[in-house]
Amino acid sequence: MALPKPNKLKDKPASQSIDSYVIGDNISYSPTDLSTLTLDDLANRYEEIHQQSQLLKGLILLEARNRFPSNNEFGEWIQTVHALSVDSQQTRTKFMNFARYFQNKERNGISLTACYEISAPVNEDVADKVYEYALNRNLSVADIKAKIKEEKKLLPILESNTEEHDQESFTETDHNTIKKEELMPREDVSEFVKLILSDVQSLSQNEAVRVLKLCLKELNKHSVVDGIADTKP
Image (tube, rainbow, N blue to C red):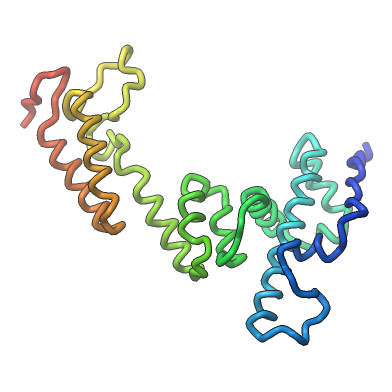
């Protein structure tokens, strides 16, 4: 059976100039009068156009994907359009992730490669923190990757890890159906966690992690089960 063609993409409003569509309304110089630009301006201009082209490609792909009921049908359609099929699936996916996350965000001081790292689905849990950290700072991709790694290390610090540390969650999930071991009475845990998180905010990343690990280790020495001190050796 022939693959149905998607609906025709809407035309760009006639009132929107090609210049504003490509370079944005916030750029004051002419896109064709390059002789007035410094070398730094030329480099920045090139990067702006490059980023905007990738963003537009991603937005186009996202819109096209929405018109198909499945990824398979979308992929089949891609192969019928030469301009789309010349890029690899990995590249197209990268464009789509980039557009999905950054379409309504500023990108000043964040390189295109860094944008790809931040917008990758695998980094979704820390993307917002890394984005705020990177904005307007012109950090290297290595710095961005290091920040992503650091943020991910912090995520499980206060989460339960019964298989490795033999301790239970601080939350009350399933408390009425599963009798859980607690580090101390729940109200004390809550106040303790608030106090520690407040104190470590002023510390460096590595020092904060070290302090939190020591606190968890100390708590584990004085665990309480249903209000009775743990007597296990």
